[in-house]
Amino acid sequence: MASKPVDVMVVNFNTAGLLQPMFDALRRADGERLANYLVVDNASVDDSVQRMAQVCPQALLLSNTHNVGFGRANNQLLAHLKGKYALLLNTDAFVAADSLQKTLDYMEAHPECGVLGVRLEGRDGDLQPSCRYFPTPLNVFVGRTGLGRFFPRLKMVDEMDWDHASVRECDWLPGCFYLVRREVLDQVGLFDPRYFLYYEEVDHCKRVKAAGWKVVFYPHTTVVHIGGESSRSVAELEAASRQISAYQIESELLYFRKHHGRAGLALHMLLVTLGDLLLALKALLKRRGWGAIRACWRHCRATWSLLFKTRYAKQPTR
Image (cartoon, rainbow, N blue to C red; front, side, top):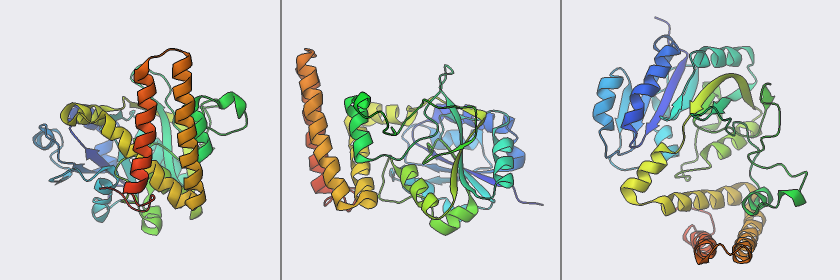
């Protein structure tokens, strides 16, 4: 029997209630014919593992005893890939009936495409950032401070002012639907394990493009991404809304050190500090209260603290 063309890779963390609708959507997209299912449960404390046995008993299921992070969990599945393509799919992302076939057909017709993403919409139909520019110390600073009018030619990470109806190359794609050619994985690997959460796909696309492959946005199918379900469960179970922010700060530091060097990291730290000062001043002038000012101080303090804990962004904290 011919092997199925795509391995769907899913990392689950406390989203038991989303497993049934996610796999139902895959089945409506002819997933039983086109896909193998590979799942890592990242030490969920809900009934995800038991639910998986009911929802998709044919899936390969790996169960971690502790949460190893998004990137490392996906990397665990590399040894089990069988198809020509791998699709990283979030449990809160629901494919359309034509998503698998259309994206696979595009990849077959365009062998230069290494990674493919699709049009992402929220539950209410609102367009989500689906095709992004690489972060830099400057565009991250401008995005945080809202100073875009002073930098009209600067490419923002989540630039939305372009035609979303046409295929286009881009810098990087969100990992909630991330179709990658197996040949790419054999050449450049998947995720840098130093990123616990956030920036994994940014770094991966950077390496994919450096190796000569194209990263492409394909708009002719839509995936509904409701977003934030794992993060909400983290907050509920660990009171970790601040921790989620810390993961993002840490990954940002690691990314800028890796791809922009020490000078880029120093510029980032300068702009973070300046940005928090500007935001605190704005909060003071607009009388938003001490809570808003303290939030700026906490962000600045957390960033500097993580800079030292990561040995100047050379190693992760976990």
